[in-house]
Length: 289
Image (tube, rainbow, N blue to C red; front, top):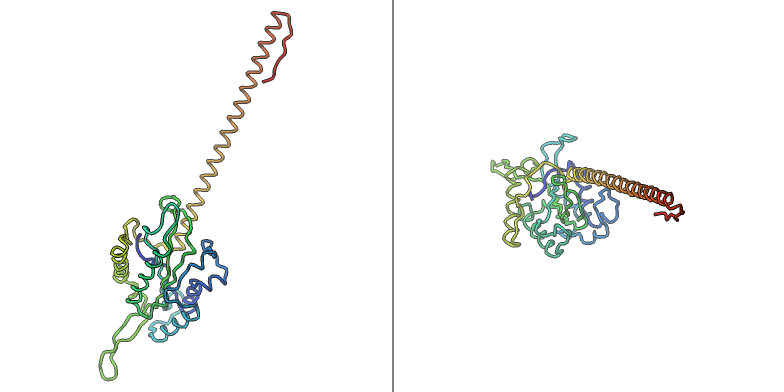
């Protein structure tokens, strides 16, 4: 496990941010159709909001945190200010059976609540919520190894990327102000610090590593990994189809050889009968094989 997934989680403005919050919300997920085929709505009832909130409350909290922060860059498009960072956090590999996909629901949920407390300590009210998802556990093809694996329960941490800056007031005293700054918020040192806290908690309380070194950090987003997995699955299916065709060809060849063998035996038998009849002058019955 390389750690918490930060890539692909930047939201530019309220429209994008609230779309993600709405997508992650358990109740809203049941009300709307999603293009993500891995979502099993029969299991959505297992999903949990760490803060125990519903979408309207989370949207309101987002607005409040944004209003209390200063936005120093107001350009549009891809360079516009990032107003929310969505982190994807998977449970440790040791909590799920890689062969069957089975896991202890209560234990995994407890681990995610411990993650919620770490995030709450670090980010306070800028943690809009931690949405814990159990309805996307599914089999997939690992594009790196071409093996079939089970995905793990995961959570989405919805964070307003605020940093504190100093500014002098009218009396010349330095005052701390809230500034939207996703670049500093997602700096390498802060990412490593959060990963280390999660790893240490997991090792201490659950006696297993979080970052086990099995995969190096990559820049692939969750959607890119899904595309890679789908491509690997397509290649596997093509290979299976080719193998099936090869087996069918071999079976057909075997059937043809059997028919040829039967014909050869019949011709041989017919020749023997003819020879006997010629020598004896008697007509023998021929039994077809």
